[in-house]
Amino acid sequence: MPIGVFDSGVGGLTVLKAMRDLLPNEDLVYLGDTARLPYGTKSPASINRYASQATLQLQQQGIKLLVVACNTASAVAIDALRKQMHPLPVIGVVEPGAMAAVESCPGGAHLVLATEATVQLGAYRNAIRERDAAAEVRELACELLVSLAEEGWTDGAIAEAIVRRYLEPLTEASYVADSIILGCTHFPLLRSAIEATVDAGTTIVDSASTTAAFARHMLDDDDLLNDQSAAGRLRLLATDGATRFARVGGRFLDENLVAADIELVDL
Amino acid sequence: MPIGVFDSGVGGLTVLKAMRDLLPNEDLVYLGDTARLPYGTKSPASINRYASQATLQLQQQGIKLLVVACNTASAVAIDALRKQMHPLPVIGVVEPGAMAAVESCPGGAHLVLATEATVQLGAYRNAIRERDAAAEVRELACELLVSLAEEGWTDGAIAEAIVRRYLEPLTEASYVADSIILGCTHFPLLRSAIEATVDAGTTIVDSASTTAAFARHMLDDDDLLNDQSAAGRLRLLATDGATRFARVGGRFLDENLVAADIELVDL
Image (cartoon, rainbow over all chains, first blue to last red; front, side):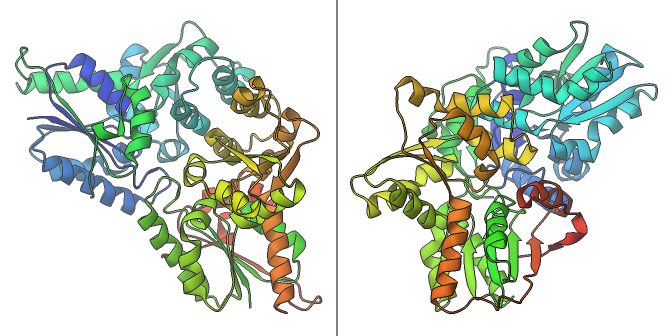
């Protein structure tokens, strides 16, 4: 049985890529709800409905695990999706990132870079403080980094200038984070630009790879891992715009995609 | 009777601002379909449905003229909206921009800066070539400029570096445009950054102000202008996210807005 991964668009493909690297024997089905992105500006009621419909589509593919590779849906809808998937497991992107940050520097100062929607929901803040009451958490909305990643301008002077400008108020206040959490699925693409602008001692927590590691761990615990001789297959579903999904998504997945690789579905 | 203006989000507020400046005696009702933005990535069938529902909402306000302040909806749905509004007039943003460009430099070389969706629809290309078969038209998708405008980073080194990078392939090919058309409602905010990076002889065609001028002309012709003693009132409607609409939209309208200024409607 495949693992289902869903996101509002192409961002979750960074999670899919990390899962492919770490779980090469698993079949993966990815669903990008591109017809209704972005989720971040929608109301909780809409996000719950969209996430439930996306999950139902993946349930019809017979998945053994659901990965919610979307920060907004993870923050808003994870409890409802756990009920919908019961008794099968559901993993969001927020909890693995928060856990990894707390483990890397207990009682530390954490800086969450995310979209405005994720910052407003306070999802990482809550998840970190639940696990470590001594932790200090700051959240910074960096909307432009999403467009930078989608445009493929992830390295070089422009990307670094934009990251530096977002961090400027903190730099001026002499704030130094122990960990920086990439709290948006787009941001792993900007990792090197972010690393170039922050203190060398800062740990970068990538919620894509932490989520993949968490998924592997959970499947292993439940004895649900595929045989190591299996060659994992990948299916990519989207609700609109196969051409753009292939072009932009190819960069996220680090693989050349064409529109014919994407199956359009209606939710 | 008021003039209705609609867009998928806040971008059309640059058109609204130009209309307010040019038509201070008119009542204006603006509808931003923020719950379903962006239109650019949606299918033509969805865009037609959304645009029709938005228009119906404005028709219920008793409007005398509809301005479609959204490039995607103008390109896809204008004919259907004209039928829906008949016998009342409908103005899109594409035609006034194209007309102004052709008038400013007949037989000239026009560069359209727009979103990917508008470029793919070829709306400005077709509208210019219909009016001037000798015109040469290039179209350039500049997605990041949308986020820059929404973030309010419209001046300075980062904005200019981004514009310069988009224009780089043309600069390297020694291409010089006679006119540059701001073919996205967000782009008038970036006018000074664009001017700073292009040849001083290039005419900048701002489709917001050309659309406002066209609306004034049309109302005047039809004898539908309000009395000059009237003080125009403004109503702002949105389908989701009043707080963000007020914060980002305030910059577009060049006026301080708070969430309570925005009426939420359901389409």
